[in-house]
Length: 520
Image (cartoon, rainbow, N blue to C red; front, side, top):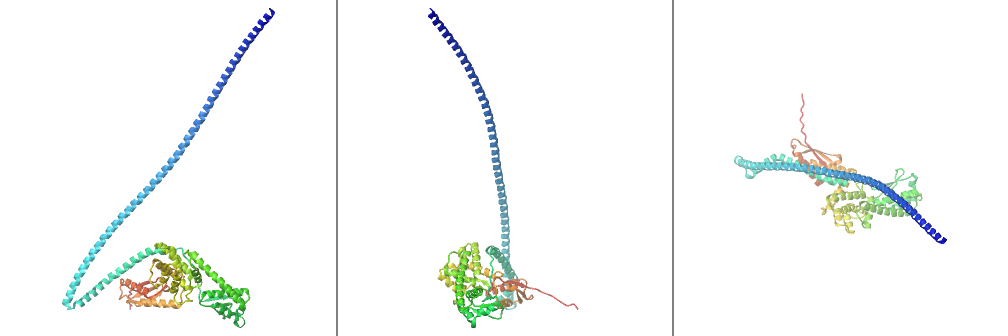
């Protein structure tokens, strides 16, 4: 029985333990559940707080973004409004300009209408005058035939002489008005062309003659150049083809010769010999040959430089060398190569203004005086030699035409020929470009005065301003104010026909009547 009691007691203990465990477990579960519930509530509260905070931040960001967008939109709207305002302003300006142009057009139309009416009135007046003139002529002719018993031919002559006297003033006035109109139109057209052509062009001019001077360090050097029994000077003259003049001029030797290249070779050779100090025939021959090679290269460089400077494209090597030789050639003191380059630039500018080929015009201007490079070596004028050279090296026909016509020997057959002739005249006639001998200068002035005095009604004529103006005094008893314009025109035409001159000559006709008496 004891073991039964033990078993029951054990079972009871187990059951009580289980019950207590269950109760404890239930209590722990309840407590854990409550803790979990509280934690969940805390999480929910924290989540709500965080969500509210995020919501507020997002709301602030959204408001800021909306504000930024509004600012940007306002800026865009302002820019578009400014653009629209500017366009409206421009449109208003265009409308005002169009209105002004329309107003000017209306005024011009009104002026044209008035001028047309005035021309119609003048036409009617002239027709009436012609009709009256015919009637007067017929009436006077009849009266003359009746009274004087003139023949019809004699009467016609008398009437024509009377009409000529009456119309002389009107004719002179017409000539004056026509000249003034032609000058105004000519100046208007020419200014734009000529000024644009020469506005950027200014070239230095070198003046040389047929002699060159070599400066010596002392007079003792003269004897060394002459050499024993003159052998050194004879060697130099034989090798260079230039005459050496050794006179009483202190510390100087003069080189004389018509070939400028030979003079330059001799000049450089003598200067080299002076610096070297060894002057004897063998050394002279060596230095002259070396100098000739240097000058030959110098000539080619000058030709290449001229072609590069003008931009006329490739050219035959022989023509390049001939261009370089023109550096040593002068015409009335003007360097021939610089003159050709200047003419090329002017011809190119003129060609641009009239719509011609600028490069071809420059090429023709550069080669227009190419014959001067060898005109002392070949027969014929530099124009004939230039034409031969241009044809030989197959230059463009416009270049040949420019060479043949730039001095008026033939009529130009192309526009470029005319432009080159004009550019040549501009380059030669500009102040300081050329000099001329005193003899030719005096002849030109004398011829200018003689031409002016040969016109009927002229009392005296004076050439002034180095022959660029002639002032003519007419007889006041024979010439009236209106006829002075006719005399000026006659003198101008005779000067153009009979004289050759650089630039322009202004003709001024003066008529003056003086009355004087002596009180006693």
